[in-house]
Image (cartoon, rainbow, N blue to C red):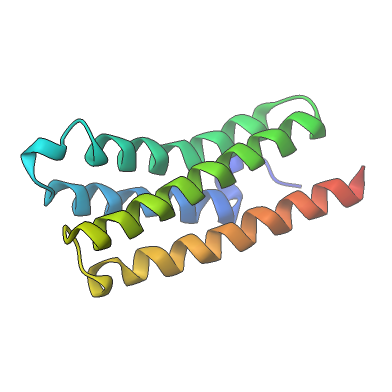
Length: 120
């Protein structure tokens, strides 16, 4: 039995994903400060935050709901990262590791949701 959400691999990996997003967004043009920069950072931080909040809820149903919200934020982050490449603000090479990590985290969230649903 886990004592804390911080012991969840999916939480750790999504938390660790925030740092490269912050580093990447430091390089964006100043006029994107309130646009893509804010959106990318908000989406990245939302992922581990929703996993933690769901873990702290008193019902499995709420936990699953927050995991789905985390997954939604993850896909939002993926979309915004792809947009960075499309707009020429980043290269596929500079975003490759981030996009691979997003794919891994998505699989982990979905596996956790499935495990929780099967316990119900």
